[in-house]
Length: 199
Length: 199
DNA sequence: AGTTCACCTTACTCGAAGTAGGTTACCTTC
DNA sequence: GAAGGTAACCTACTTCGAGTAAGGTGAACT
Image (cartoon, rainbow over all chains, first blue to last red; front, side, top):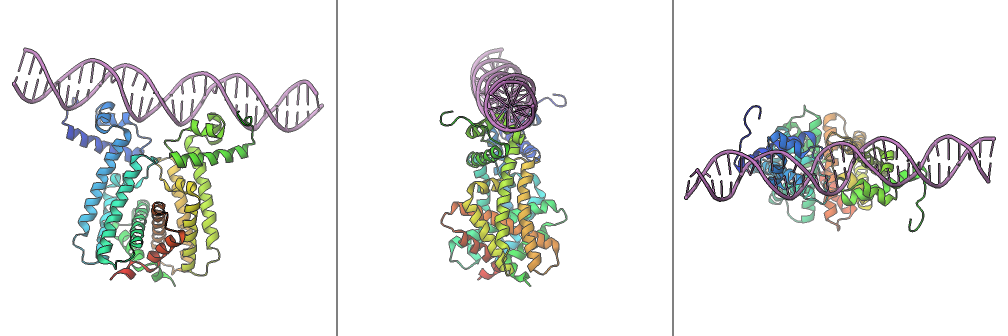
């Protein structure tokens, strides 16, 4: 309009653009506070376009979450490929994770905030992200650890994911804590256990 | 109406009743899906009443969360008073927590679901609940552990809270896992560390 | 040049949050 | 036991945002 005439775009490109901007808006305003009109305006397109591409506000959120999840998976999987031991694999994975949450704030923001949308797809979607991580960890463990109690292994994986997620949120409040330091803290408790610190 | 004529109630009692019902509705429908009209109707009162007592939908949610948090604190604090060692204190606290989340589903449901309300009070409120738990744990630790690196101790507390929260959610999918078993799983990783299981 | 299909718009409906202002039952005080 | 004050309560509204119906426009291919 003012600067450049609003241009027509091929479907795929417009879609990427919409997701990119929606990710920004959701991350900065929060899901419920962000309005579709607002997102549409920033994209430079009208609201029904968003609905044509994503069906609903939640659908748009879903697309954003899925993309973030994919990015997280790639990063963590890639990090663990060359590992030589359980300890090494765990450390590499953790480091990759803590680097991710620092470098890709918006993506992480989407993944960390549980949805009020209980019963709807979005909560499911976020849960799915964690499942992805626990599966990865469980797989690593079954490779390196004594197998036996499957339920216990599963519980341990959940445990690790939850612990790291929380630690990541803690890191947001502590700019001075580097991914390396966070990794060390995590490894310390996870690997040696708290007993090592008892007096 | 049908049964008993809608009765007037003193302020405090009506307030308790509203919170009780709101907790139900939020837990079963989810925050965003639940409507104030709906809650008002179930209470047997008109919508402006809710606003007179709680100012906003979020205010009502806040009241529910605060009450649940208080309950959780009482339970966990009470559990750790007679502890004789770090290990014992940790175990007692964990057990109390896992019992709580099983027995008071609705309360836990409110506490576990992060809000989309970033920037608003509710997210802050939930974060506050975790702060309460981490403070408790940090206090326990400083009593039993070698003191030294405060930042590390704080990180460990966050870690424990996150881990347990996630494990609790995992328990929801596994009815067969008792609070006692959950506690044992948690203690196993937390206390001994993963190194104990490496082959 | 004209037809077509994908991209895009304006202008609406509908539901739920929040509010203005009036009404009724209970309790005090004489 | 009637006057009157006030806390509890209601009906009827505004507002705002999600979602939709129906129609406009431009580029590409005959």
